[in-house]
Amino acid sequence: NAGVTQTPKFQVLKTGQSMTLQCAQDMNHNSMYWYRQDPGMGLRLIYYSASEGTTDKGEVPNGYNVSRLNKREFSLRLESAAPSQTSVYFCASSEWDNSPLHFGNGTRLTVT
Amino acid sequence: GENVEQHPSTLSVQEGDSAVIKCTYSDSASNYFPWYKQELGKRPQLIIDIRSNVGEKKDQRIAVTLNKTAKHFSLHITETQPEDSAVYFCAASGNTGNQFYFGTGTSLTVIP
Image (cartoon, rainbow over all chains, first blue to last red; front, side, top):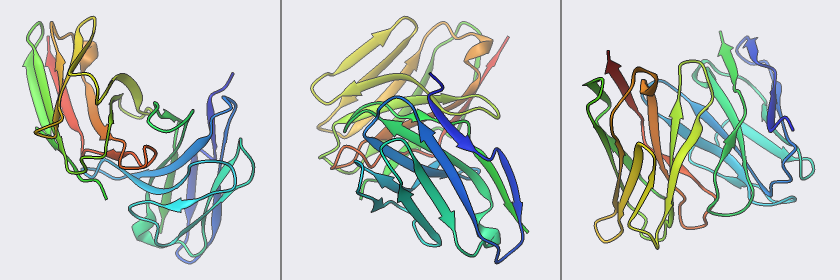
């Protein structure tokens, strides 16, 4: 039981490049989330998926897209990376509404 | 959307003393309030949570109190130990129960 697995752990991009962050959970959770963490700003919600087949914008969705591929997997795509997207990205899942978030180990992304 | 404010941003205590971290939230529809601990370079991990039908919850040295009328909740750590040193985040579940909004974090240092 690995919990929430994110790949890659580290990534360096040049401005304008694209990439996809992968996330998978093996806990049969219904909801999945993408957060970014910046110094002094806590965790900010980018997108979430309340259930398979649905996705919704969070606080800071601009510049990102997501895909809920199936119940297990939820990917985050940066189409044209910008230096402002330099951050640590966390994927999380929860069993249902109002239940604890389980986080992955994070992806440290640097955009130069 | 929900707005969560957290204070203080940094807190230093002597080992054995108590630490208190306070959060306020804006959306009266939020009814689930988790607290996460994040050690340097690690993922956030749930330490305690409380639901809106409960005023207080304890787990060994950790307790959380909730005042729904005033829209604030607090984390209390008693008999602090050096291993309690970390960043602590509060969160509120938002009006759908799956749009978790986080405070900006409190960096707790326990001085031996």
